[in-house]
Image (cartoon, rainbow, N blue to C red; front, side, top):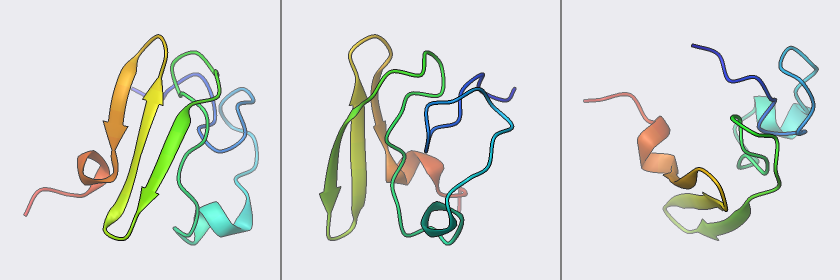
Length: 66
């Protein structure tokens, strides 16, 4: 299921993704479920983001299972 909001802009899904995000250089800044701005922590090995309504997300959650 596609989230209703763009995680890079906070606008409704289907809007353009910034170039840096498309290249994988930018972590998501907005919650895909509610469009709220998230608290993002960038680490050397990835990132973590927290939505006040929907909880924690991590870059390891986005990686394909190996």
